[in-house]
Image 1: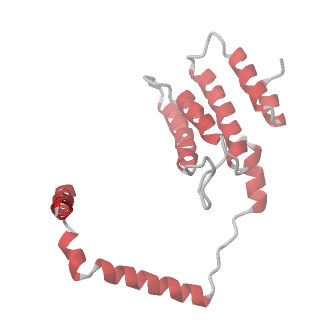
Image 2: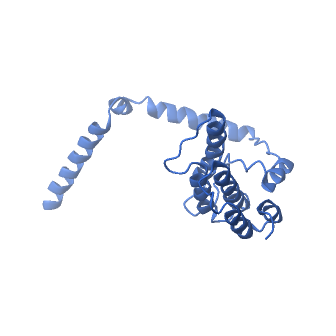
Image 3: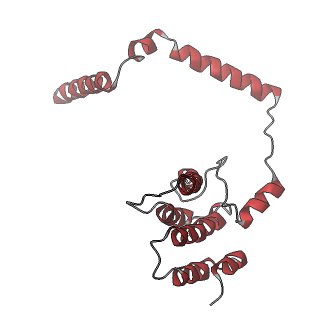
Length: 183
């Protein structure tokens, strides 16, 4: 069977995972084995995520579990930092997936450092968003209106209120609705 890294480079993600699992058989609890499996899963997720397809979340969850297996502790500061950096990168992409399984527009997800997706993104480069004068004026007017609403007299009543204040208000509305429904 071919090396899992070669299969990843060719885009055969299922074959890469099988080769990786075969390679780490018997030592799956070792930090390096879990690191390799996490790379396979994250890069597979990246191929779907950056193509705008569904299904990346399943692979990111598998990568997250491989990076930090439940109950694991890492003895060195460097190993912990390396894994937490990768974990943070995977979690950002997981949070950028919408309810339909696709990446949200304008997400800040970064691909795995060894991924081909990163090279494609660097070539494309971020396009600066330039607004016309009319759009800028509309945004300023909208911001002013929002600020005015937040500073309105009725907004000040609930500014420092917490959960229980809102709960009591909701309860009162419910009771009023029941009283009107009985009529």
